[in-house]
Amino acid sequence: MPIQRCAVFCGSRNGHSPLYQETTRALGTALAQAGITLVYGGGKAGLMGAVADAALQAGGDVKGVIPSFLEVREVLHEDVTDLDVTEDMPSRKAKLFDLADAYIVIAGGFGTLDEFYEVLVNKQLGLHHKPIFILNMHQWADPLIALINASIEQGFADPSSHKLYDVVDDIPTLINRLQKN
Image (tube, rainbow, N blue to C red):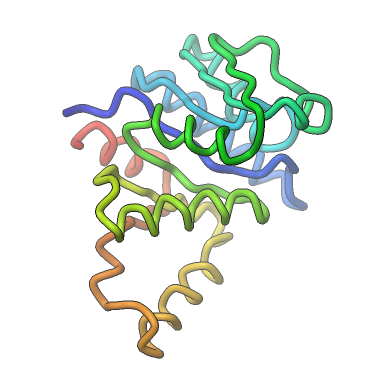
């Protein structure tokens, strides 16, 4: 079944390098051009806003999901195609996870890592079989990948855990993989 909706987990901040925002905008544009609906955290700030704005500017559909208490903090993105306001973070994540056919993890903070690990653990437990991609833009995910490798090397995770996710270094490869699923 082709990927129609893809959740992007990313930061509500821009990070220190302008390359993060530039690459994030390129991802939003590429998803829209591939006809893949962006599902994301519903905010207008940081990389979340950049990916949504780029997808919208490229004519794509954007589905935002934001909890009511973050409407002001993350500056609710009123221009998205469709926006759901949830009661809390658990219901936000459940909706994001449910709406997506695949997940892309890009640069972000603790919330991004929380979302990544939750979909990763759920896949490990067989609760879903959706593809998970880490877009290692500008090597931001190298420490994350090293942590996963350390967990495996030290016997806390099975070596087969590497099959739960794919690391890609560029957007064309990522889009190609999404279109082949």
